[in-house]
Length: 110
Image (tube, rainbow, N blue to C red):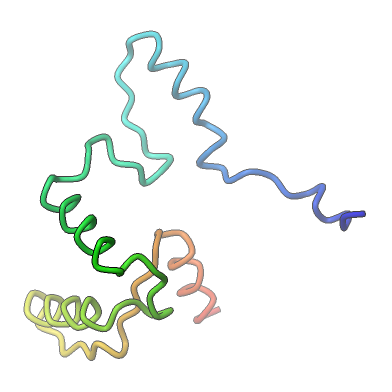
């Protein structure tokens, strides 16, 4: 019923070490986790409050593919001011996660 290529579909490598990490932590050893982008702290209260406010105001839907224009403008301004570059917000793309962004950038040049 399914395509044969699904048999080759595995799991993300970052998840593969999760069980091992949990076993090591269970022994009481301190582990610095570099396999995922999961912080070891809760979201700051002001960030959680703003997220709730935005959701309560109906801003819990998908945004434009390149990211919110206001965020892209803020990023362009911050990079321009701190790096001495002239960054046009239209060239800024906000993407969730690092690996796909790095891969897409590499593919643009290869």
